[in-house]
Image (cartoon, rainbow, N blue to C red; front, side):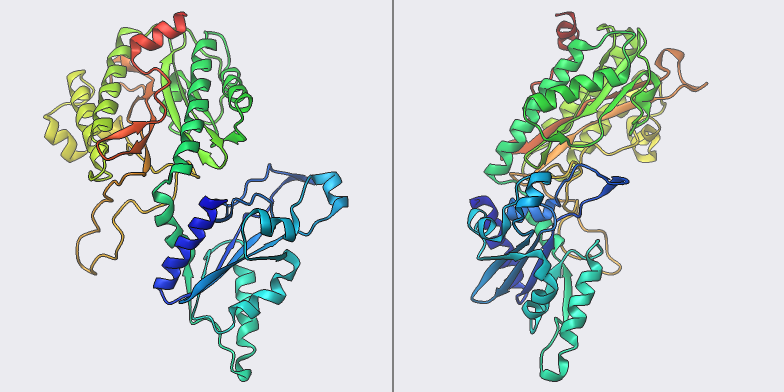
Length: 441
């Protein structure tokens, strides 16, 4: 539990620097899928980051002052009858000792205990604008009702997620190792899908190969809805149907990754369904691969978040000009955004406990009222981001026919290091010759 108690200590230091107060972080509620069936439960990332506790109906409370802090967990009571139906519960006593909290109580005591803990606190740090807003308002009102006795409610309410975001941006060794393992599982799943793929299969059959490898290797779930997009469907960035029959001669774009112990992986590979690139497919594929390699080379501590994107855009745009998709000079095509017709998204996003992870993409600090926007975030050791350029060519009268309905994306997960980056997902081949050789084998 050391990583979690250490994170609570760091959060307490951030709260103390702002004058101290009461921290309340809830886990996610359970959600009904239909009638009396629930969606598979997945806890709140912020709550889990601080606790490592996976049961629903739980709340972390921290009292922080200038002398120290106290961590209190509210959780479900032990209930042997419910454990027969739903599985093991820690209960307050075991949760307190196992997860290194100072105290623990049952969650049915929240309404009685929180107003006591909140009384005379200078500020409240909690998840603002969430499913628990009603409870927060009720607790503040309960404290305000005691005003005649001299008890004061917090004067300020802050979104605690802003403080945790900055912590989560930099992965510690514990997190980095989990993400390496998640990447290895996802890489093996992509290799399995490449080997299994053949014309006539349905997209969902390839998705089944991915899910099989995720589960077989210990992943608890996919990190997001898998995209298995053949032919023209690969030009739909968030294609979800996964129900088309795959045709000989088309490409297959797979964007899929597993979640392991709370951390996501995110890989995209594009390859020929029959195992052989056509000339047009290979031409566009090599442009995207060169762009991705340029972006990888630009990813290092001290660079700006946008440097990989800018590097990828230059290669992609020049490639589009060379193959006749767009005209004009390189600088003019970039300045006018002509390339965006065929490459309309950014090259990177943060990755961590959430596939589109938390954290500002610009440097902290408010800009001046009439001044320029804050500068782009400077990459630091321990940050993890995706690198995923692409080209998406929909059929159109002004586009050469041999490029029609070709969608290509290549995505890897990069851990920023001092001198560059570690590609966590390198176990999946991405050079065209290597892909063809794997599929032949």
